Image 1 (spheres, rainbow, N blue to C red):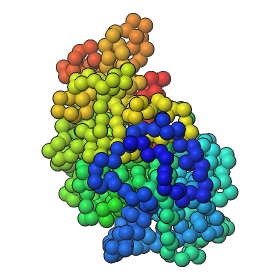
Image 2 (cartoon, rainbow, N blue to C red):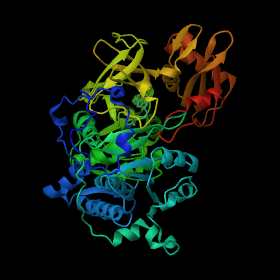
Image 3 (cartoon, rainbow, N blue to C red):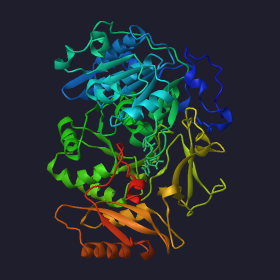
Image 4 (tube, rainbow, N blue to C red):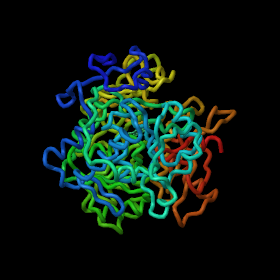
Length: 547
Ligand code: 3UK
């Protein structure tokens, strides 16, 4: 089942990425057992999702909206092709070279990513909040040869160590143009290039993307993905779970540099001929406004965003919305309920990972079971393993293991051995399956709280607390304790109008004891004004543990 040795010649003149793939015996199994996953030996994913749409006569339909911008498929293709010509011409890059991309969500950022893939180069997208030192680590690990960066985010790039000479700025504001040499401006260089370019004739397993994990600790890991992986994620979740179609309008918050956003806000809509709205710096209020304004039909964001939007939703017309997708971290039932009451929509929860490229367990419509993430989506399979790597039956908590058409291949990283076991991808999550084959998230494997011999999953206690009317957000972690090993500690943000006090703490403790086994109640409660989160919406539990 492994497809590590390509009979098909690579289009890459620069073989860096292929040379730094893990050894074949450390790869996960790759499974292509659906008719739609039978890809030809040669493919360029952008030719398939963009050029084919224009060739099929759909060039006049809108592809992307941004602040003050709407591009049709034909216009997007022209932008992409001009960038392809800049990359091949003045930048003198050759297939297989790595290009670091940096920008907030915007049609130009999308065009830049697509152009890199179309030219047979390798995209290395980076999160907007990263600082110079972190960018330097990524540039060094991926041996980046060029940078395309939004002018607004130039500062950290300018001072990043090892920055390649070949750095271009895009979306340069009018007042900054005069101070910038034209050969430094992607916008200026594009204007001088023809608006058409042929896609690089890449092999299906030529690398097109190195996506760095948004890991909360440690050195970031580069996950390697191929042209066919990009098509595979488009042909699994959106096709079978979302059931998206050309009339859809996608909107949401995840950055394009995060594979949740790259798929949900760019690749998925293009694959079905639909459109997406790409906006920067969205808040719960402005996302609601934008759903109303654009009449979006599918929303992608993280659980906390839905929780905050639920309290404001009444002020907006959300009648256009057909589907809402939650991913990035566990969806508490309390948040699912609040959003459903506010919007009338049953949330589609889905677990994905950078290593797997996108979502692999989910459910929609009548298949949804509140509390469960769902079942392996068509194309993927999953099971729960014990500490010896043996599958366990229903009702037992263990390590989540998955396989499908995509899987983990770290760029030159010994941690490959931690993620892949006997062909399965181990995501680092503790899960339990029920007799019907539904998968229930418990916690990250490392985050299970062990108190006086009991295993306690923080998210279960969080879900209980979130049902209390005074609780806006909360995070539950294990706090070291001489007697019990660990005790359950809740970090709570109260809603406006509620004040922290010992009485409030006692009330919350009693409230938890009424809902779940009393030994799980938080013996310690701390009130905070906000919780530490990553740019991808994940709670930084290690920060709660160290305060
Ligand atoms: C956690 C979830 C419970 C889980 C991602 C959708 O989050 C994404 O990728 P990351 O590499 O993190 C992966 C880890 O995040 N997680 C994500 N979704 C859920 N836990 N329920 C969920 N629904 O610990 C997983 O191992 O940042 C999500 C699509 C693409 C992605 N990259």
